[in-house]
Image (cartoon, rainbow, N blue to C red; front, side, top):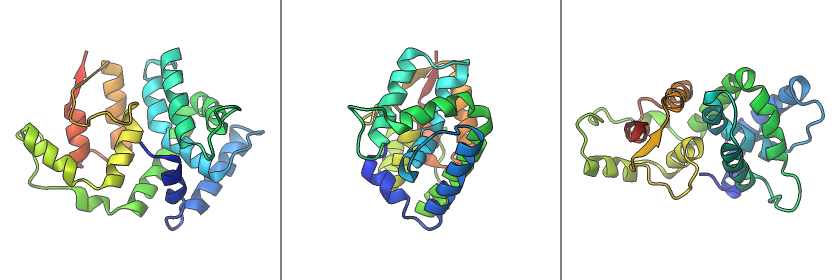
Length: 204
């Protein structure tokens, strides 16, 4: 997943800082009146939206899921907040409550960010077929994928920063459906790297 320094770098892509500032103010005005948060931390919050969506797939966030989300939030936060309240963790409480309203807005911004950071269409491969690709083919696709695209994918869908994209992982049906829905909203479904990740999800 992204590091604190990488989140700071994402703000430097054309138009991203201005858009984050605009959405942040809207979020504060309509959802969290007394929220004090910098653009860096607000972008971190937006990048956590897919993880929050998956955690909410069964209607509520469990204690284990909350701990995992807090860990991710603190990793993305500007400056680190181990000894005091993390603004991303605090803002996340508001996003959890207003997920249905804000997730489409945040996903739309994440799509803009991805396309500002990388030519996403060039990562598609018409010769790749997930149904016939063996493990070696899949590994090659992962290695060919731009680093930043892998960062986006792991930040969205994985908790362990060292997790292997091509490793099998068990997931509940309701979480599987939410992952699929989020990927569609983010425009990931045609990308081989996502198709590989998705093919490794085993409904338990």
